[in-house]
Amino acid sequence: MKLNLFSGLYEICIKLAKHRKAPLFLGLNSFIESIFWPIPPDVMLAPMCLARPERSLYYAAITVITSVLGAVVGYYLGYFIYDPWIADFIRWLNYEASMEKVREWFTMEYGILMIFIGAFTPVPYKVIAVTTGVVAAESVASTGSVGMLTIINFVLISLVGRGLRFFLEAGIIMYGGEKMEHAIRRYIDYIGWACVILLVGYIGYKMMI
Image (cartoon, rainbow, N blue to C red; front, side, top):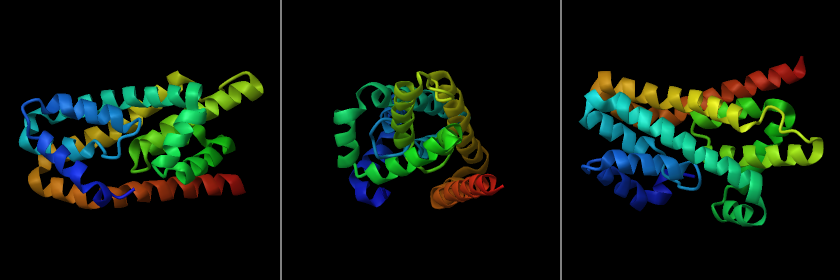
């Protein structure tokens, strides 16, 4: 889903990043983005780090913690009430095809890796969170166990993936300034998708040997 489809919301987030209560808005945006919101945390995190470099790591910590907390909500929404309410909402957001593709990967025993991909890359994290819960519930129904997709594993891997992404971003801006902020905004999707391609290539290789 491209950001230019939500330019109005994007501009609102940019303005909120300059507000005196920006950390609160950053946490709220990060939390709901992991459940249903289309605007990624980077939209607020980057300008806030640029404005207050000395607080960059603090802002990154807020983003990571609230993002993972939101993902926990998404996990349990998928686990307990996916069908029919959440399923209809997923269709309304036009994420149905993405979610089905993610479910295919999960059923191929790469669920843990998919959680990391969603946490670190531009793949919609909300889709990963809800799908993890859905697949965990389906696994319980069929085998009596969630396997590797426990909430503890989900949180730990999410913390690693989200932490790497947002602390790296905040650190680069803290030391690189405005030029690095512009570079991140320009190239973050390319970097993220390159990671996805490498991981998918690795999975394909492992399946062939």
